Amino acid sequence: MRFEHACIEAVATAVPDERVSSAAIEERLAPLYERLKLQSGRLQLMTGIAERRLWPAGMLPSEAAARAGEEALRRSSAPREEIDLLIHASVCRDRMEPASACAVHRRLGLGPGTLLFDLSNACLGFLDAMVLAGQMIDRGAIRRALVVAGEDARGLLEGTLRRLLEPDITRADLKAHFASLTIGSGAAAAVLAHRAQVRRPLSLIAATAGAATDHAALCEGGPVGEGRLEMATDSEELLQQGIGLASTTWRRFLDTTGWGSQSPARIITHQVGRAHCRELVAALGLEEKKVHLTYEYFGNMGSVSLPFTLAAALEFEALAAGDRVALLGIGSGINCLMLAVRQD
Image 1 (cartoon, rainbow, N blue to C red):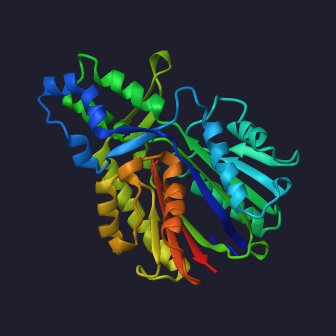
Image 2 (tube, rainbow, N blue to C red):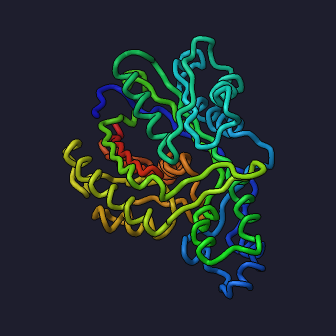
Protein backbone atom coordinates (compact mmCIF):
# COMPACT_ATOMS: atom_id res chain seq x y z
CA MET A 1 0.00 0.00 0.00
CA ARG A 2 1.29 3.44 -0.93
CA PHE A 3 0.06 6.93 -0.08
CA GLU A 4 0.16 10.17 -2.06
CA HIS A 5 -1.47 12.90 0.02
CA ALA A 6 -2.16 11.66 3.57
CA CYS A 7 -0.11 12.86 6.53
CA ILE A 8 -0.04 12.97 10.31
CA GLU A 9 -0.83 16.52 11.40
CA ALA A 10 -0.65 15.99 15.17
CA VAL A 11 -0.09 13.20 17.67
CA ALA A 12 -0.77 13.42 21.40
CA THR A 13 -0.99 11.29 24.53
CA ALA A 14 -2.62 11.15 27.94
CA VAL A 15 -0.97 9.42 30.90
CA PRO A 16 -2.46 8.22 34.22
CA ASP A 17 -1.03 9.56 37.46
CA GLU A 18 -0.96 6.25 39.36
CA ARG A 19 2.33 4.37 39.09
CA VAL A 20 2.61 0.65 39.89
CA SER A 21 6.14 -0.69 40.15
CA SER A 22 7.18 -4.23 39.29
CA ALA A 23 8.44 -4.49 42.88
CA ALA A 24 4.96 -3.64 44.20
CA ILE A 25 3.40 -6.34 42.02
CA GLU A 26 5.87 -8.88 43.36
CA GLU A 27 5.06 -7.83 46.91
CA ARG A 28 1.44 -8.78 46.25
CA LEU A 29 2.63 -12.09 44.80
CA ALA A 30 4.83 -12.85 47.83
CA PRO A 31 2.79 -15.93 48.88
CA LEU A 32 3.18 -17.42 45.39
CA TYR A 33 6.89 -16.57 45.22
CA GLU A 34 7.47 -18.16 48.61
CA ARG A 35 5.54 -21.32 47.74
CA LEU A 36 7.32 -21.74 44.37
CA LYS A 37 10.67 -20.63 45.83
CA LEU A 38 11.09 -17.74 43.38
CA GLN A 39 13.39 -14.77 43.90
CA SER A 40 11.90 -11.29 43.85
CA GLY A 41 13.11 -8.92 41.16
CA ARG A 42 12.53 -11.38 38.34
CA LEU A 43 9.67 -9.36 36.81
CA GLN A 44 11.79 -6.28 36.14
CA LEU A 45 14.90 -8.35 35.37
CA MET A 46 13.15 -10.40 32.68
CA THR A 47 11.10 -7.62 31.09
CA GLY A 48 13.04 -4.42 31.70
CA ILE A 49 9.80 -2.84 32.97
CA ALA A 50 10.24 -0.89 36.19
CA GLU A 51 6.69 0.43 36.40
CA ARG A 52 3.46 0.93 34.53
CA ARG A 53 0.55 3.38 34.93
CA LEU A 54 -3.10 2.77 35.82
CA TRP A 55 -6.20 4.90 35.31
CA PRO A 56 -8.47 5.41 38.33
CA ALA A 57 -10.83 2.51 38.98
CA GLY A 58 -14.02 2.86 36.95
CA MET A 59 -12.61 5.22 34.35
CA LEU A 60 -13.86 4.31 30.89
CA PRO A 61 -11.55 3.77 27.89
CA SER A 62 -13.49 6.43 25.98
CA GLU A 63 -12.67 9.03 28.62
CA ALA A 64 -8.96 8.27 28.38
CA ALA A 65 -9.12 8.30 24.58
CA ALA A 66 -10.98 11.62 24.58
CA ARG A 67 -8.29 13.21 26.76
CA ALA A 68 -5.66 12.34 24.18
CA GLY A 69 -8.03 13.35 21.38
CA GLU A 70 -8.58 16.77 22.93
CA GLU A 71 -4.83 17.37 23.03
CA ALA A 72 -4.37 16.18 19.44
CA LEU A 73 -7.08 18.60 18.28
CA ARG A 74 -5.41 21.42 20.20
CA ARG A 75 -2.11 20.71 18.44
CA SER A 76 -3.70 20.57 14.98
CA SER A 77 -5.21 23.30 12.84
CA ALA A 78 -8.42 21.34 12.40
CA PRO A 79 -11.75 22.86 13.41
CA ARG A 80 -13.80 20.18 15.14
CA GLU A 81 -16.46 20.32 12.44
CA GLU A 82 -13.83 19.27 9.86
CA ILE A 83 -13.16 15.91 11.53
CA ASP A 84 -14.96 13.69 9.03
CA LEU A 85 -13.84 10.36 10.49
CA LEU A 86 -13.35 9.21 14.09
CA ILE A 87 -11.92 5.76 14.84
CA HIS A 88 -11.60 4.38 18.36
CA ALA A 89 -8.90 1.72 17.97
CA SER A 90 -8.29 0.29 21.46
CA VAL A 91 -8.37 -3.27 22.70
CA CYS A 92 -10.43 -1.88 25.60
CA ARG A 93 -13.95 -0.60 24.99
CA ASP A 94 -16.60 0.85 27.24
CA ARG A 95 -19.09 -1.94 26.49
CA MET A 96 -20.18 -4.22 23.65
CA GLU A 97 -22.48 -1.52 22.25
CA PRO A 98 -22.74 1.23 21.34
CA ALA A 99 -19.28 1.81 19.91
CA SER A 100 -16.91 3.58 22.30
CA ALA A 101 -16.31 6.02 19.44
CA CYS A 102 -19.79 7.39 20.19
CA ALA A 103 -18.72 8.43 23.69
CA VAL A 104 -15.48 9.95 22.37
CA HIS A 105 -17.45 11.88 19.73
CA ARG A 106 -19.80 13.25 22.39
CA ARG A 107 -16.99 14.17 24.79
CA LEU A 108 -15.07 16.03 22.06
CA GLY A 109 -18.10 17.80 20.62
CA LEU A 110 -17.42 16.73 17.04
CA GLY A 111 -19.85 17.51 14.23
CA PRO A 112 -23.08 15.61 13.43
CA GLY A 113 -21.76 14.43 10.06
CA THR A 114 -18.80 12.48 11.47
CA LEU A 115 -18.37 8.88 10.34
CA LEU A 116 -17.37 7.00 13.50
CA PHE A 117 -16.74 3.43 14.61
CA ASP A 118 -14.55 1.15 16.71
CA LEU A 119 -11.73 -0.83 15.11
CA SER A 120 -10.16 -3.65 17.11
CA ASN A 121 -7.07 -5.65 16.19
CA ALA A 122 -5.17 -6.21 19.44
CA CYS A 123 -2.02 -4.07 19.60
CA LEU A 124 -2.23 -3.18 15.88
CA GLY A 125 -5.56 -1.34 16.02
CA PHE A 126 -4.12 2.18 16.00
CA LEU A 127 -1.83 1.55 13.02
CA ASP A 128 -4.66 -0.19 11.14
CA ALA A 129 -6.86 2.86 11.73
CA MET A 130 -4.15 5.21 10.46
CA VAL A 131 -3.77 3.20 7.26
CA LEU A 132 -7.53 3.15 6.69
CA ALA A 133 -7.85 6.89 7.35
CA GLY A 134 -4.86 7.61 5.10
CA GLN A 135 -6.39 5.70 2.22
CA MET A 136 -9.68 7.59 2.60
CA ILE A 137 -7.83 10.92 2.60
CA ASP A 138 -5.90 9.91 -0.52
CA ARG A 139 -9.15 9.08 -2.32
CA GLY A 140 -10.67 12.43 -1.36
CA ALA A 141 -13.44 10.75 0.64
CA ILE A 142 -12.61 12.74 3.81
CA ARG A 143 -10.66 15.87 4.76
CA ARG A 144 -9.44 14.95 8.22
CA ALA A 145 -9.56 11.96 10.55
CA LEU A 146 -9.04 11.55 14.27
CA VAL A 147 -7.74 8.20 15.53
CA VAL A 148 -7.87 7.59 19.29
CA ALA A 149 -7.15 4.76 21.70
CA GLY A 150 -7.52 4.43 25.46
CA GLU A 151 -6.20 1.28 27.13
CA ASP A 152 -7.06 0.37 30.74
CA ALA A 153 -4.81 -2.31 32.27
CA ARG A 154 -6.34 -2.34 35.74
CA GLY A 155 -8.91 -5.10 35.12
CA LEU A 156 -6.40 -7.45 33.50
CA LEU A 157 -3.73 -6.80 36.12
CA GLU A 158 -6.08 -7.25 39.07
CA GLY A 159 -7.68 -10.35 37.57
CA THR A 160 -4.27 -11.87 36.93
CA LEU A 161 -3.06 -11.18 40.46
CA ARG A 162 -6.17 -12.79 41.95
CA ARG A 163 -5.71 -15.85 39.77
CA LEU A 164 -2.00 -16.19 40.61
CA LEU A 165 -2.74 -16.14 44.33
CA GLU A 166 -5.05 -19.16 44.11
CA PRO A 167 -3.52 -22.24 45.80
CA ASP A 168 -3.42 -24.47 42.70
CA ILE A 169 -1.14 -22.20 40.64
CA THR A 170 1.98 -23.88 39.27
CA ARG A 171 5.15 -22.55 37.64
CA ALA A 172 3.57 -23.31 34.25
CA ASP A 173 0.52 -21.22 35.19
CA LEU A 174 2.73 -18.32 36.24
CA LYS A 175 4.59 -18.54 32.94
CA ALA A 176 1.32 -18.39 30.98
CA HIS A 177 0.16 -15.32 32.91
CA PHE A 178 3.51 -13.55 33.14
CA ALA A 179 2.96 -11.26 30.14
CA SER A 180 -0.21 -9.92 31.76
CA LEU A 181 1.92 -8.42 34.53
CA THR A 182 3.66 -6.15 31.99
CA ILE A 183 0.51 -4.36 30.79
CA GLY A 184 0.04 -0.64 31.43
CA SER A 185 -2.62 2.02 30.85
CA GLY A 186 -2.43 5.04 28.58
CA ALA A 187 -4.07 6.90 25.72
CA ALA A 188 -2.99 8.28 22.35
CA ALA A 189 -4.54 10.19 19.46
CA ALA A 190 -3.53 11.37 16.01
CA VAL A 191 -5.06 13.81 13.52
CA LEU A 192 -4.55 12.83 9.88
CA ALA A 193 -5.14 15.18 6.96
CA HIS A 194 -4.27 16.00 3.36
CA ARG A 195 -0.67 17.22 3.28
CA ALA A 196 -1.71 20.39 1.42
CA GLN A 197 -3.63 21.45 4.55
CA VAL A 198 -0.68 21.01 6.93
CA ARG A 199 2.22 23.40 7.46
CA ARG A 200 4.92 20.79 8.23
CA PRO A 201 3.49 17.37 7.41
CA LEU A 202 4.71 14.00 8.58
CA SER A 203 3.69 12.31 5.36
CA LEU A 204 2.53 8.72 5.04
CA ILE A 205 4.61 6.96 2.38
CA ALA A 206 3.74 3.25 2.36
CA ALA A 207 2.50 0.38 4.50
CA THR A 208 3.21 -3.34 4.45
CA ALA A 209 1.14 -5.97 6.28
CA GLY A 210 1.90 -9.52 7.32
CA ALA A 211 -0.16 -12.29 8.92
CA ALA A 212 0.69 -15.61 10.53
CA THR A 213 -2.68 -16.61 11.95
CA ASP A 214 -1.65 -20.22 12.51
CA HIS A 215 -0.15 -18.83 15.73
CA ALA A 216 -3.26 -16.99 16.95
CA ALA A 217 -3.57 -19.25 20.01
CA LEU A 218 -0.21 -18.11 21.40
CA CYS A 219 -1.89 -15.12 23.04
CA GLU A 220 -5.59 -15.18 23.91
CA GLY A 221 -7.49 -13.10 26.41
CA GLY A 222 -10.91 -12.06 27.55
CA PRO A 223 -13.42 -12.24 30.39
CA VAL A 224 -13.63 -15.33 32.56
CA GLY A 225 -15.86 -16.13 35.54
CA GLU A 226 -17.45 -13.21 37.41
CA GLY A 227 -16.29 -10.72 34.77
CA ARG A 228 -12.62 -11.20 35.55
CA LEU A 229 -10.17 -10.54 32.72
CA GLU A 230 -7.35 -12.96 32.00
CA MET A 231 -4.85 -13.47 29.21
CA ALA A 232 -2.83 -16.62 28.53
CA THR A 233 0.40 -16.17 26.59
CA ASP A 234 3.13 -18.50 25.42
CA SER A 235 5.64 -15.66 25.62
CA GLU A 236 8.69 -17.52 24.32
CA GLU A 237 6.98 -19.01 21.28
CA LEU A 238 5.10 -15.77 20.61
CA LEU A 239 8.41 -13.90 20.62
CA GLN A 240 10.02 -16.30 18.16
CA GLN A 241 7.05 -16.44 15.78
CA GLY A 242 6.52 -12.69 16.04
CA ILE A 243 10.15 -11.94 15.19
CA GLY A 244 9.92 -14.37 12.28
CA LEU A 245 6.86 -12.61 10.89
CA ALA A 246 8.43 -9.19 11.47
CA SER A 247 11.55 -10.28 9.57
CA THR A 248 9.64 -11.37 6.46
CA THR A 249 7.40 -8.29 6.61
CA TRP A 250 10.45 -6.03 6.99
CA ARG A 251 12.00 -7.40 3.81
CA ARG A 252 8.79 -6.70 1.87
CA PHE A 253 8.56 -3.29 3.54
CA LEU A 254 12.05 -2.37 2.28
CA ASP A 255 11.11 -3.56 -1.22
CA THR A 256 7.92 -1.48 -1.15
CA THR A 257 9.58 1.72 0.10
CA GLY A 258 12.91 1.36 -1.69
CA TRP A 259 14.59 2.02 1.67
CA GLY A 260 17.62 0.27 3.08
CA SER A 261 17.72 -1.05 6.63
CA GLN A 262 19.64 2.07 7.70
CA SER A 263 17.39 4.58 5.90
CA PRO A 264 15.09 5.51 8.81
CA ALA A 265 16.31 8.24 11.13
CA ARG A 266 13.96 6.91 13.80
CA ILE A 267 12.51 3.47 14.49
CA ILE A 268 9.26 3.31 16.47
CA THR A 269 8.18 -0.16 17.56
CA HIS A 270 5.37 -1.67 19.57
CA GLN A 271 6.71 -1.74 23.14
CA VAL A 272 6.57 -5.19 24.75
CA GLY A 273 9.75 -5.33 26.82
CA ARG A 274 13.50 -5.76 26.76
CA ALA A 275 13.68 -9.19 25.07
CA HIS A 276 11.28 -8.25 22.27
CA CYS A 277 13.16 -5.04 21.49
CA ARG A 278 16.57 -6.72 21.58
CA GLU A 279 15.50 -9.59 19.32
CA LEU A 280 13.74 -7.28 16.86
CA VAL A 281 16.74 -4.99 16.52
CA ALA A 282 19.03 -7.95 15.88
CA ALA A 283 16.72 -9.74 13.43
CA LEU A 284 16.04 -6.63 11.32
CA GLY A 285 19.59 -5.31 11.41
CA LEU A 286 18.55 -2.02 13.00
CA GLU A 287 20.73 0.55 14.74
CA GLU A 288 19.77 0.34 18.41
CA LYS A 289 20.36 4.07 18.96
CA LYS A 290 17.58 4.88 16.47
CA VAL A 291 14.96 2.88 18.41
CA HIS A 292 13.02 5.02 20.88
CA LEU A 293 11.96 3.14 24.01
CA THR A 294 9.13 3.74 26.48
CA TYR A 295 8.47 0.30 27.99
CA GLU A 296 10.68 0.78 31.08
CA TYR A 297 8.30 3.25 32.73
CA PHE A 298 5.03 2.57 30.92
CA GLY A 299 5.02 -1.16 30.14
CA ASN A 300 3.06 -2.62 27.25
CA MET A 301 0.11 -0.29 26.60
CA GLY A 302 -1.46 -2.40 23.87
CA SER A 303 -2.63 -0.37 20.88
CA VAL A 304 -1.42 2.83 22.57
CA SER A 305 2.23 1.76 22.84
CA LEU A 306 3.36 2.61 19.31
CA PRO A 307 1.65 6.02 18.88
CA PHE A 308 2.63 6.89 22.46
CA THR A 309 6.27 6.13 21.63
CA LEU A 310 6.04 8.12 18.39
CA ALA A 311 4.75 11.14 20.32
CA ALA A 312 7.52 10.75 22.91
CA ALA A 313 10.18 10.52 20.20
CA LEU A 314 8.89 13.63 18.40
CA GLU A 315 8.96 15.61 21.65
CA PHE A 316 12.40 14.28 22.60
CA GLU A 317 14.10 15.26 19.34
CA ALA A 318 12.58 17.09 16.38
CA LEU A 319 12.90 15.53 12.94
CA ALA A 320 14.74 17.34 10.16
CA ALA A 321 13.19 17.82 6.73
CA GLY A 322 13.48 14.60 4.75
CA ASP A 323 13.96 12.36 7.80
CA ARG A 324 12.32 8.96 7.45
CA VAL A 325 10.59 7.11 10.27
CA ALA A 326 9.61 3.43 10.35
CA LEU A 327 6.60 2.48 12.50
CA LEU A 328 6.87 -1.25 13.20
CA GLY A 329 3.72 -2.75 14.70
CA ILE A 330 3.06 -6.32 15.73
CA GLY A 331 0.16 -7.84 17.62
CA SER A 332 -1.35 -11.12 18.70
CA GLY A 333 -3.02 -12.98 15.93
CA ILE A 334 -0.16 -12.92 14.83
CA ASN A 335 -0.34 -9.78 12.68
CA CYS A 336 2.28 -7.26 11.62
CA LEU A 337 1.95 -3.81 10.05
CA MET A 338 4.82 -1.51 9.11
CA LEU A 339 4.23 2.09 8.12
CA ALA A 340 6.76 4.42 6.46
CA VAL A 341 6.49 8.15 7.15
CA ARG A 342 8.67 11.14 6.21
CA GLN A 343 9.13 14.60 7.66
CA ASP A 344 8.50 17.11 4.86
